[in-house]
Length: 193
Image (cartoon, one colour):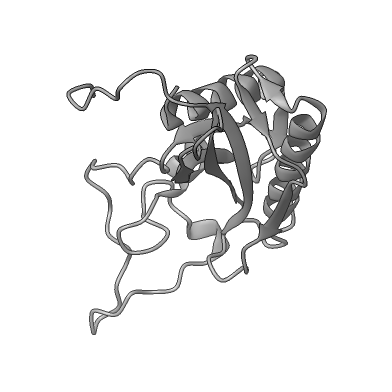
């Protein structure tokens, strides 16, 4: 078993448990939770409208009613349409691997779950609530189901923390988990995509 097998199992488990969950979206609708491995998708490569500029070429501030779905929120960043399609999201990423020592049958893998939400409403309350609720639900699920697919066992305690809010209208939190997995019995194929 490889670290990616563990991440696949975590994603399958969370997709199953969160499959029917819909969270309130900033536009008043509902959003499903998206799952990604390694990182969030990059902002789209489509042609984007530039942010409006004043006569001196400085970016103009936009009123709430002027937010265009196809204008990047920040230079080089997501548009509002992209952010609404991607978030809320859970990114599953292996960050540290420790091989079993002599006589042990287990490898130890550290997996970080980063939860993100987008909330461009004036209150910015739903975004942080989504992050907390998703992280807390993941914690409860892993504590109740410590072994996934009879192969991967999570260590307790499971904790998480929230990032500061300096990246508004995006909100993030992170859970670091430690997983035991049987020693690798196959070699990793470096030619696989």
